[in-house]
View (cartoon, helix red, strand yellow):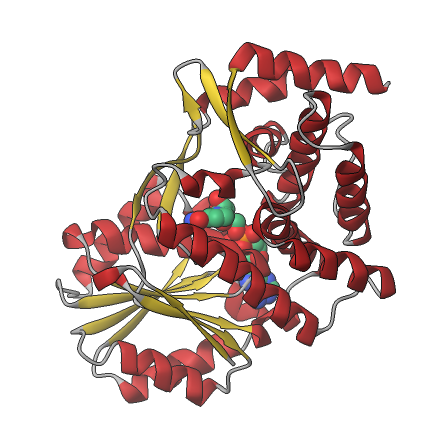
Length: 365
Ligand code: NAD
């Protein structure tokens, strides 16, 4: 078990990573919620079908706390809408939760984003605690306090910064997670290595060469290392005024590809393509060398992630960059990795960015 502190003054908390017995998990959550007036559990609606741990945990929490209610959310990304958020807030009110309540979000990144945002806005803000159940949510979505829902105009366009009181990454949940979702989560781990932790990248590189199927022990270490990277970045710039932007490496083109695929690609799959696009762009601009592109593509491929930009990048797809939040007037703050573990941010004019990416793709054919 690893306890990683997130030091943010009165918003400080811990990310705890390990294999929990249900009773230990219930004890830990109940201890956090002991001073709250009630525990409102929001759970990905499909999760109990996959994992009996959810119901056992809810039952265990009911024996420990005086007021516990649970709501099944629409599963996955479809919970990240205003109408779903409204349903949750109505349910919180009808269930009698007051300002002393604490919301527990159990599920993937969509559920933790929805739950965190509901906690941020219900009665102008109540506490939250997160139990991420996908690899992507453990290494990324549940850490750092960003919460959001989507608009038709784009993903995550309405949200709030709202730090949880605690995050519990219970690796037992990964037993039921499909291999495709594990691979998608690993895209964010690779990103963490690229931007700030060269030894982490080199370990993924070496270990996937031996066997691309990662053991629980390997995953636990990768989760802890990438959560450490995210915590360090978030603690240096909680509200993304400057340094936190490096976490967006690969996401500018990645988000556009994700939207352009009509969400046929998983977030992590789109990020995998976005990492390659960013590195190829860096190569074309003389910022990073070709070997970093090749090494990264090889690692992502071994993990089962897409790396071939063909059929994923065209004018239409790149038009989705326009509503990306990284845009400042007509320029994009684009993150590059000049060398393994280092970052460089450059403002690029949007037309120039699109032209470069398209030219890169054309020259390849
Ligand atoms: P997700 O929440 O949609 O979950 C993916 C699928 O896995 C769902 O169908 C879900 O039902 C299923 N699932 C969840 N846990 C499971 C388990 N243990 N066993 C079997 N199935 C399980 O997707 P995700 O990839 O976890 O998260 C993506 C979301 O996270 C996106 O909305 C993205 O915007 C958001 N995100 C947020 C941040 C942030 O900083 N807030 C960072 C990265 C991503």
